[in-house]
Image (cartoon, rainbow, N blue to C red; front, side, top):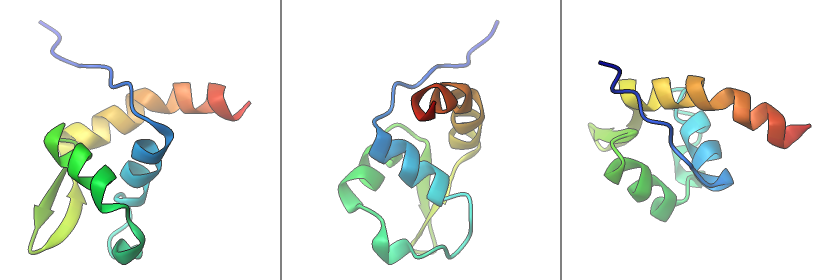
Length: 73
């Protein structure tokens, strides 16, 4: 059974999720409300008081990347 879920994230949520891919990429600039939303969706988490992308967040980012290309076109 396939348990993958497509996430309908806002542009801000996508950008924050992308920013979490790179360790120490200026976390002070992240929108705390958007980060809290991603944590609630289990796409991000806090580790040692730093936000990190979860494996589920990585899968969502990869699966959603084709939709992001459509938006950019």
